[in-house]
Image (cartoon, rainbow, N blue to C red; front, side):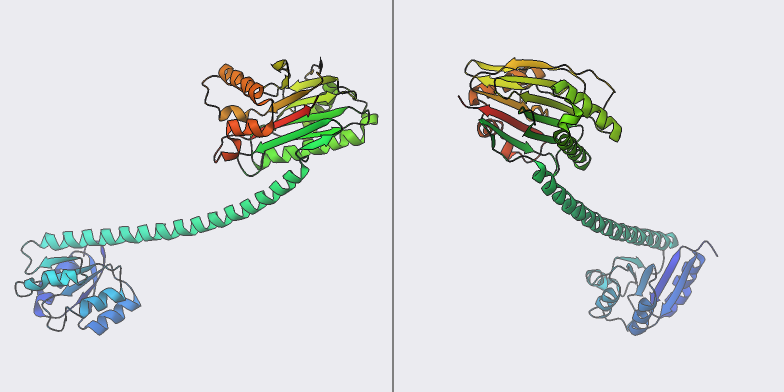
Length: 390
């Protein structure tokens, strides 16, 4: 006997089966089960599925209108191959329409034909079975993934509410200054953050920060920054850091001590008690901060290294006089991702023209950039303004 190739169930009786078909199949390495009646065949199908069901079409006990539909109903995915002779050949089309998959003509003029038909039928059935198993595995995996994503989204939404609660009100009025911001995250959580508050020495501190990356990991760093600035406010006199560059140096050391993988770009400004002077220091934040006034819009000086990269980066302190009325405008670099201009220089020129045209008003800038209509953005976008009316 050859190598076993599969299990066959044969429905029908007659000398032709015993003499011609069964011997050929056994010699071909097939394991054969025999059922002489429809009820016996269905019982065997329910007990265990063969690879192929062979049906002798010439058997007078087989009723095409009932037997084949019953067999197909008992085992929907089972291949059915008809064994037909000259007398039963006229019923072939009808039988195929009733659910059979293929047929072989008796007597076997070419014995290899039956072997070929069975081999192809079994291979096709096994391929369908593998496909169905893969589909089930994929469906289960997709269900698990969807459930995990739903849990993750709920967690992210909870984190978003916490993060939003840490942001200052917008607009926020402190004395004669108005602070206003808009943050558009690329995901639910954002790595961009802003804040402003009055220090014990009556200076007003404000900053915009952009954490590398985005999503939950970047959002965690914004929470760390918030905690550090709260510590600065609480321990201001003890820490003795009245200047912008000293504050950045302290923040840098604290972030290095935490051991975070992310780095942070940050622009920090201090407005004097009389609101006439701005002192600032920049930890590689880009694009540059702009000041709009009646005389136009200008960029402030860039420079510095991001926070959390190296010890003692040596931040520079710079100061400018403020006009009677002004708007300080800050962006995170995600804004460049949505601008149509080709090069960085063109984007910077367009941004300063936009601020000049809109006078730095958050709603107007947002409308011109289409920030509130964005559906899919590659990076977080932050817009933060400080305004003093004349």
